[in-house]
Image (cartoon, helix red, strand yellow):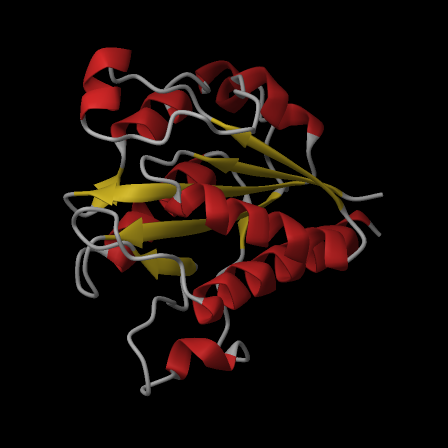
Length: 199
């Protein structure tokens, strides 16, 4: 059975919600999908004062975990047009995996959230994808046969480079049904590609 890791960092819970939808999509394609998060680096008192969602069920990942999976789908919110530092710090610890080529040939993909429609979704996706490419991973985007990313009747996330959501500056906007559908589609597509590559 194809093994998919959904690896995320979430401040207010949006990426957690998207991670659950990504994993559900991978499972719909017949894969085993595990959800793990990267460690929080903000001191707990500051995180609580700023209303971070600290009660997340997913276990905390270590870089060594990555080697066990056929595909890794990475989600992190934007920070000034790039992935949040918590996720960047995690990937900065994967040098030993890079050195031995442990992730070469695995399927990789990305998802993100921004405060606004034009808050850096695509550049953040690329900041994640760059790390995956350096590890020799095979990248999947969110193709346009997911028609939801072409909707004009509502404000919505979605890009050909990955699944996205819009959170609002204070994190008050919930992930929409269309954005969850995009995340589900991405998870399903990645699991299907990983299964084909394993044949």
